[in-house]
Image (cartoon, rainbow, N blue to C red; front, side, top):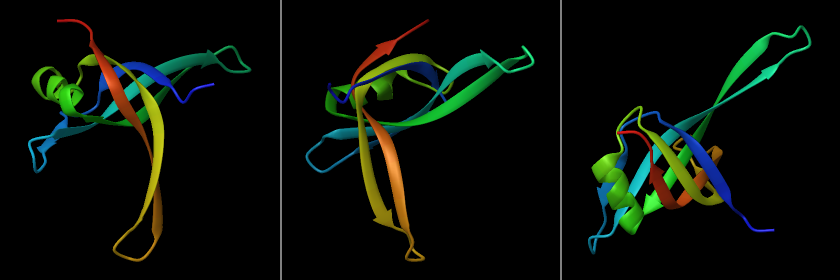
Length: 107
């Protein structure tokens, strides 16, 4: 098995794109995916999951040009995990989707 994630969702914010030393770009955004199921009473329950997405290079450039809040996009990438210590000394853990490819939907 391979570490691979495929998501189709809507951008929850305008991407934050930074240009690093040397001109390489990195984009950060959150996307929401929706799912639904029926509970024990037969009621439909809608569930939204939020995913933090990071993209580098050409993929970040595409995101910068074409993705805005609410835009439906597809992401193909892999899960990554990292940790850091916050200003109060607590260890924080982050799970992100590292995007390799992006698909734009709609207009």
